Image (tube, rainbow over all chains, first blue to last red; front, side):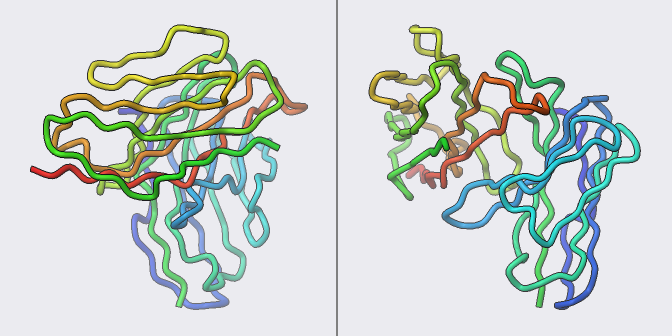
Length: 114
Length: 119
């Protein structure tokens, strides 16, 4: 298994509070991604990173920000959590974007916003 | 924009039998990759099989095989000799082989099919 961890694994928070989720990898892969998973939608990309301090928006980026100050860490921040952000969040990594490169996923974080 | 559709929200199969999960996609591109991911109750996303669009031969991984019909934009997954451990959500995914301005190619996931295996 690829060395990807996410913390916390579970979190319950209240509307309006800031929340930060952490993804840590030991594979030294350049590319990192944050997805959210909701019933009926599969996985949808929030933000991604193609290197240290290089990030860009995915298809559902509103209300989220990210930072990547080190190759191994990719942080996802909900500036002011809302109930619509209750979801399961997955981090993924990939070594490159060429060929049949595979994205490897972390174990997920279940976030509940009350 | 590319889309991925899985028309079967739920399916079930008897242990040791064969089941086929359907996936269709829409794209105007000619070069791309297709994947099937498995997500068991542990929530870990696991790559099951992948197919390069330029390859006519269908990919196979042990009990898992695909039926790739490029003209029909269909990519079904066949699981043979189903086992209890095959019970999971299965996601079909698409990725373009064309590099974007930031050299990122987005993976697009279908909504998933929940597979139950009956003992």
